[in-house]
Image (cartoon, rainbow, N blue to C red; front, side, top):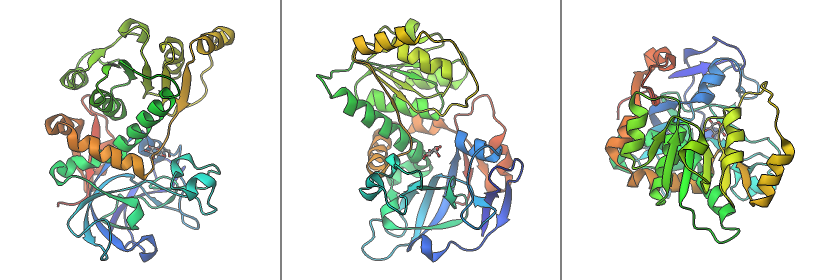
Length: 349
Ligand code: BGC
């Protein structure tokens, strides 16, 4: 079968390969892949900066934001033939650590977890894949191809869960939230903020194009300036760019008792002068919390699936801004001005 494979850490190594059928060891549920979303992590892997092949192999099948249709599922499975499903990305470490042992692989303590399409386990960008019942999640049929948004939605569902758990350490009645970045993660974080009844402000650099409109259609406010000019003392800031200067701005401008959730992975190398004492003073005197959030466990996928099921379909379809057939996968990487989420189409339902 066809699969998009890459030699991790080797730039320019990606190719459409002919690979073996999915191994039975991956699970009893057989899924036909419909589409796979491309994100910053895939671009990093393709550029030779990230990723790990499965042990003893040179190439890794790419793809972790999947949507597929069940071809075979044994009786008693949580999904049935014909269901639209998404595969969970991370697998618990084999030890397992205390967190992986209870299904919180997103909080793996020893780093020995694997991730489909990223770390030591083939991804979903192949015509078919196999999976075990615990790692497959059904999406609402009416979402169709939009179900491909579940993986990034699970990541923001986890981020919001973290924010709320921290907020609830005291009386917690948040009103305003800032989201930095109007890419797919930022827009989905804004969607979940609006669904929580918050006054959401999204910051991005683009003053034109579809991003401002997508934010407005959500009922949120779009800004191109600095956090402090957008809204004073937000209760929550979800940082979705990984731009280091914004990370510091977020820490500096979150409101009293506020929570800053960092979801973007920055590249290192940039140093700035920080008045550490003043930052510490502000954070202590205002009970501020900063939390990093990565990946998602099954609970977050289920929360994400609910959030997508409730969301406006027209709005979600604008998020999937471009679809590229697998044979022309390279086109998915040529960024277009109005790209939000680009999906590689693997097969038709
Ligand atoms: C994925 C996460 C993953 C992270 C780090 C992200 O793109 O969405 O599931 O944990 O990359 O590998």
